[in-house]
Length: 95
Image (cartoon, rainbow, N blue to C red; front, side):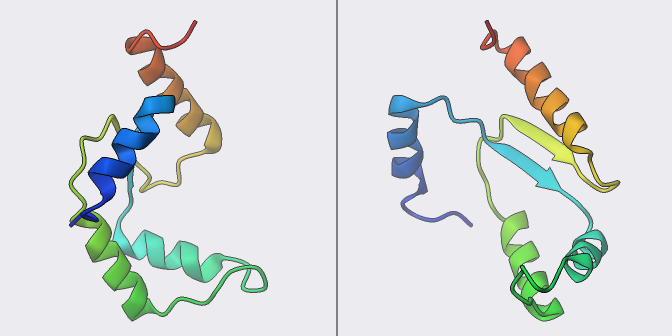
């Protein structure tokens, strides 16, 4: 499920920027635990039912992903950066 305006929005962004679409997936149980572990003083509360709804909607998003990452084990920031850097090198987008 995608927003009907998304193609136009991405086209507009691509006029001025290189847009990299990255899909990051993790099991639902991992998502729940991460939300529950957040500092509640700086994050809005999210019920498990709402989180499930968000997760189901996210799984239905169909985009031409440039990169897909599995975040099941808690991808470190350095690993994420390395994966993006490697993709950019493969596309000859790094100078």
